[in-house]
Image 1 (cartoon, one colour):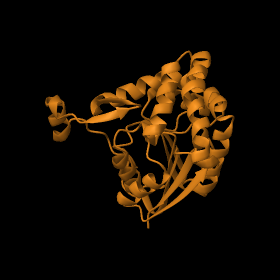
Image 2 (cartoon, rainbow, N blue to C red; image 1 turned 90 degrees about the vertical axis):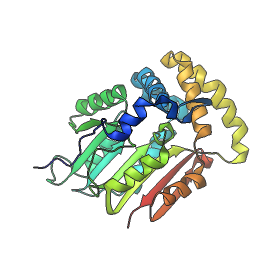
Image 3 (cartoon, rainbow, N blue to C red; image 1 turned 135 degrees about the horizontal axis):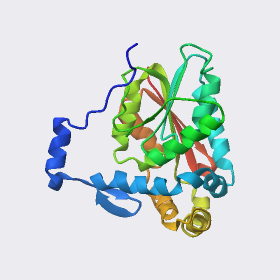
Image 4 (cartoon, helix red, strand yellow; image 1 turned 180 degrees about the vertical axis):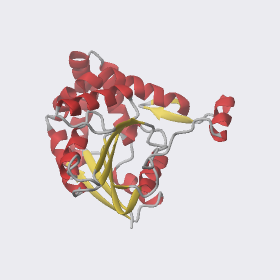
Length: 271
């Protein structure tokens, strides 16, 4: 049987050119810092290596458990059916992938495939182990979402929850997600967004004072959670992200602002 995924080839001419001339490096943001694009992935990796083992605990504390409701809505809107093929990008600790495995009847339906992926080895390892503890031995693959190692028109559903804002070239990642879904397929992007104006002052105090304090007390890492707050501010708001998705080629984007706009779910459709 041929492999559905394509091998990564870092030694392409473009890659060689980039490596040979560091002066061509563009700048991007890492939170409020300005860094070389080549540096960002490593800095983000360090954040998630640091927080991987406390990731779920911190999510519950930071969101007062609301992240579970946001993810349940994402799972419902994905409308996964038995026998479908699903890719969960930046899948972290595997909670979405586990739900999709059940909905697709993975392990029972011969056509069903559910892949857990992440760019970060620590996060992917935690997710794999937690799925195994539940008796769900899903395939796991580590890759950069800006270069997805799967064939075009392969998946019915692609999801990314709280991962897009950490990607250097968001348009490139979204275009890759569009490429690998079938006509009629959908990409679901669950991400922090810009809250309503009346919530903003409270949200800012919570983000820049409470989150780093929680990070220090629970994960012994205040800086990673300070980056979290900054990365949210640098991420496009809901209308801007919807526009970005349409510009990379999605035929339709359905946007749901949740909890006063603190989070938004974008559903991109490919005709």
